[in-house]
Image 1 (cartoon, rainbow, N blue to C red):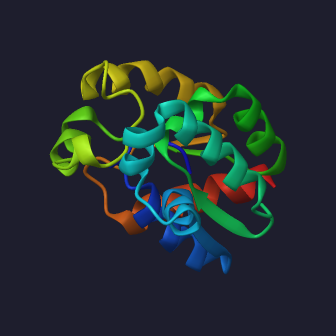
Image 2: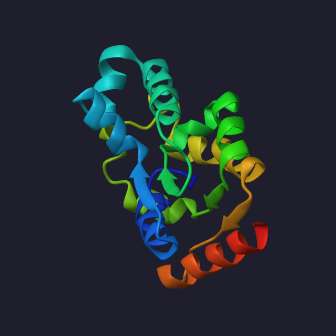
Length: 162
């Protein structure tokens, strides 16, 4: 699952994993558990590059078979990691509108979003959208649709690809 913070990767990903009878991992939570600190604490003490390195390190620890993973939105900044993921899985892009993401991210400044120190959330959104779309095997736009419909659409595309 790829997309901006607040796009619904974890919520949709968990339900998708259940439908596929796969396990589910939220990479941000996995990193925080392993590091014993929040993403924002990592950024504040070591910088954004440190978080990007940890994302890479921790993702390589995960067996990508029979698992749905919701990584942080900044994973898109690593072409090496995106190539690795694409070789071992199907990439689903949750293409949520900026307005809905902004509404959901009332904690954006403390959530550990890479890039917010120098750019607005809107700028990051506009910068990342074409990157997500370029890597995606499946793109879904959830606006105005029930989660069940979004998951059914993903499943239909997923089984078509296999």
